Length: 327
Length: 267
Image (cartoon, rainbow over all chains, first blue to last red):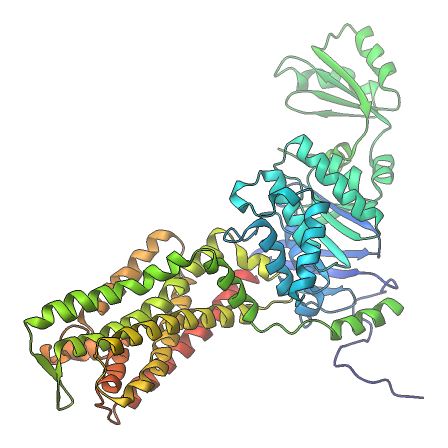
């Protein structure tokens, strides 16, 4: 029996249940309150190395509160949390040294130019100047901002700022990348460029944790996700498994005149597994959309517009919470 | 388990942050904007020429602890203390407010191994350095104009560091309570009367009773009194009161600021 040298770091297993071997993020009964308001109601999480993990939910679901706890800048109110095997309550700086964080709102340094934003940020990680410069140039190239190196932050478009923020989050070559709504507010072209960069990181084996209220983003980027609503996890699994479990294969969307949808829902209720009434359309959940549509027409109903499509995570969310993701 | 062990090994290698990172960041910002840096220095120098030298032709001078001091040499240490105050307050208030509330730079900084303590320490060090550059420049102007009366003046420079520390710490602490740019009116409301009445341009004996007591209790007065005692050679045991006052004020400021940073940024 040899005694192991103590490094001053706790190494016994964390309390609160079975730890999956090698989890980068491990949470049990994790809660966050602000005064009387509880934003996160006791959630369990495990994120494995190399995984792309997503939090899907509307605004106010508790995604950002959870992300801030994982980022070791917001102490949990209750429950256990370990990031990279360390307790964020006691090892914040050590954890943050190995995280890359892309916050929801830009926190770029407006008083520094683009390249200096990266070089100075590197210094916060204790990276030496020459190495910082090398990494900055490499990352500017990666996010296609090399020709903007000397520009001011205020002169960048929204998409460029997000790309710079992504580059900044990579300056310490993190083990775990946290992206809080990385593409919110961007136009489609900028989003696709950003997704492409994130996809490359995923292929390089980086562990990504993404929050989003866009179901297409979740489907694009996440191997596995949890659906959050009102501070709880209401479902989890791969995008495909979630759709299979909580929705039908196809959806027939019927658009009638405004105000008619609720009344017409009853007349088509037996044609689908489930009918959802939205203010501007009816959603008929069915195995075969075209066939369902044909039977709608047989009943003499004439929608203004129709669409048959595959089920998405949006439908899963609607099913689980009764609400749409983006208001 | 292998991963946990690996993480422990890397944890030990986490960088030791000090706050100096913030000083270097600020230096880089001002290196590209040195004119802004300079303007804060000019104001007390202009006052020295206008009031000290200009008005000094009409006024003989004042008594400082038993020495008769020519008017310009009386005003100069007042402006020296004011320049130390300016140098510290500018970044401690406007600069920090901008980073805290407007561009949220500190939120970005805290997503790294940096701690709120590093931010408070780094910003205060920077304020102190800016203040020290201003007061050194001012002392050189004073010496060149023959307004230094004693070898004690060698200690006036370190004495201005205390002024910078006090005003930097307190300014930083007060800034964390500000919610909008309008709140800065209060800073002006505190600084301008202090600048005019803290025995800067005329002796505190001009006031009687509680008013005099009030003036002597203001931090700028303590700073002015201290550096004036040094540049005119009228050092007494009372000078230590000012030293202590400024040290305590700065220390309380740093403590409050760093608690407030925790509350505002790490909730």
